[in-house]
Length: 167
Image (cartoon, rainbow, N blue to C red; front, side, top):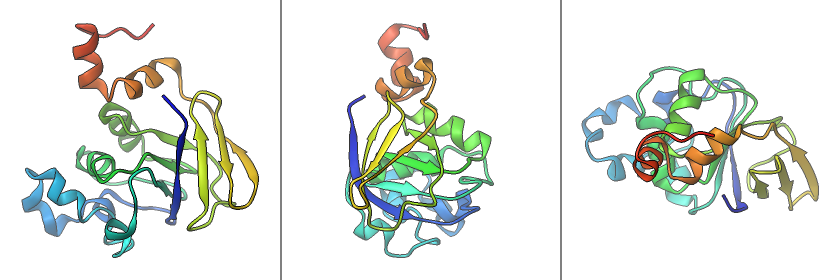
């Protein structure tokens, strides 16, 4: 995967799948592009209308807690977010994100503020905050996960390789 560049949208701890994909919009679950227009609106009502393709969601601890449905990471990706950075993720959200092709990076997000411009090198595990001229690191993803992300998610990976090829 190439280097990712975009603006940081900062959220706090315990952002649930209901914050990401509001339950009151359950009727849109079969129209994910429409549901994506409401992504994270319960955490920031202006996020979906103001974010730009390639921007980053930056959370605190326990990002993605709650429901195990794939809608949450899927609509984050459909909205154009290039990666989610957080101090920690709910396990099933993390796995669902990789499966749908959305990079999720565990890192210390305290030094990143709303609006900071970021450049992320997934292969090297480096986040450059070009607004503050600082560099942060994250544990690089295992090669198998990078291949799944590069292929666009687990389904596309399976199609591309006529099965699973993770080594």
